[in-house]
Every structure is written in structure tokens, then in C-alpha cells.
Amino acid sequence: MTKTGYCNGSDMLLYIGGKAVGHCSTHTATINSETKDRAVKPVATADLSAGFWKEKSVTGLSVTLSAEGLVFYQETESGYKSCLSMIAKGQSVEVKCMERGTKDKPYLSGKFVITSLERTDPAQDDATYTINLENDGIVTFDEEAITETADEA
Image 1 (cartoon, helix red, strand yellow):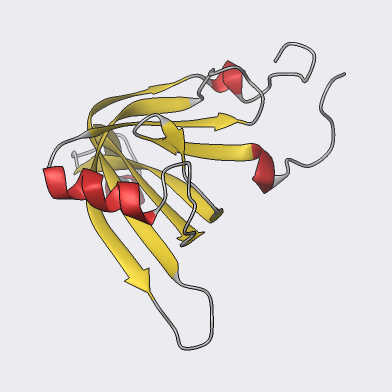
Image 2 (cartoon, rainbow, N blue to C red):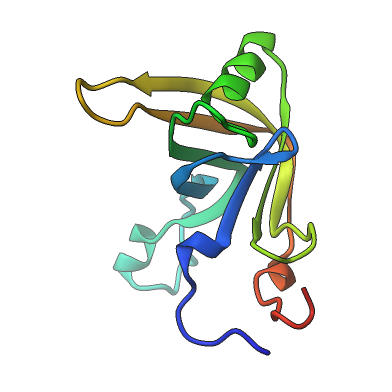
């Protein structure tokens, strides 16, 4: 059966340290290009306004990830407790983003540094946490993993 229609966000998973982010309510992946402007004098025969236009080149790429989740006492995935342990080590962690049921075929993967871990404990409400990560080196993208069909998974 081929997936059709709109992608359901609940089908998209973020894994940190080999386990899915537990009781995750949302996650975001932002891919950034660092650029450099290049202003050159146009050829002598060009219009006067031709010099207003700049060329751009990509000088770097980066990925930032963030996720929010509920703190759950019996967490078996990467919840607040395991994320706290990972950030305390001060080391990069393996991260991947993939569709549920794709047999470990991520569309984004690489090493990331946990840059922040925040916990919010409101009175008479669910405790939540937010984690932010930045890539540490090369990130691998596989756009074919996003278009996986349910039968191929």
C-alpha cells in the first residue's frame, strides 16, 4: 500500500542515542545554508542597475534539531532522564530522523551535540522538556527514505 495524502507528523520520529524521543509532542529539523555575497562590477556594456545584483555562494551547511516531550516516569525511550545523562557527558550523540515503520532507514542522520535541555514543571499540569541539538560534522540526507511506501517498509 502506497502512502498518499498529507504526511501525518506522528509518523515522523526523532532518535537520539539509538532510541526514539519518548513521549514526544513535536520535533523540528532546520537545515541552514551559510552564504557569502559577491559584488562584482558588471561588464561595461551592462545597464547601470546591473551592479545592484550580487551573486551568492554557499560557504557552509548546518542542521539544528529541537524536540518537546512530556516527562514520563516509566519512560523506555529517550526521555528527559536519558537526555540529561547524555548532555552531562559533554559528547556528541548519534541522531536520526525517519518515518515510523521504515526499518531503520533515516532521511537525516549524523552526530549532534545537545546544546540545551530545558525542563518545565508547572503547578497541577504535565511536566515537559525541550531539547536542542546542533550537528557535529557531516549530516547525511536520504530523500528517498521520505517517500518510502508502507509495503516496502
